[in-house]
Length: 77
Image 1 (cartoon, rainbow, N blue to C red):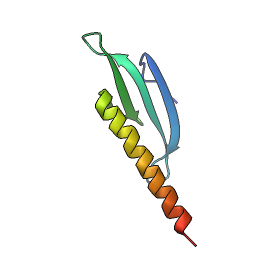
Image 2: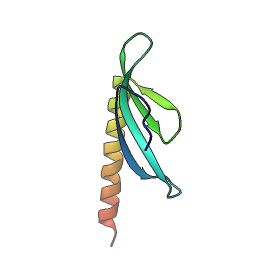
Image 3: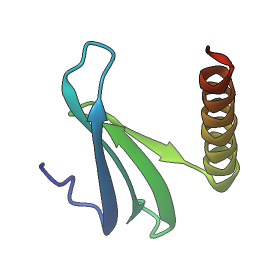
Image 4: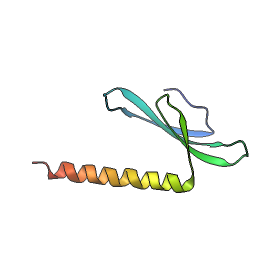
């Protein structure tokens, strides 16, 4: 697992849609103005900068998706 060189980062390993191992990394780094920014990167792809509003929305979307998936699994016979 390679690091992205951010000030703070945490990585979770999972599988992509083809079953291959992939890392999802979230972290913090400073922009060119010295402001602390939230970041997310998937695999070796580009980094997305997350403002606080987008980060909160992303967390809520993940929570809702996980709750829906769990509910669907529980409905299966």
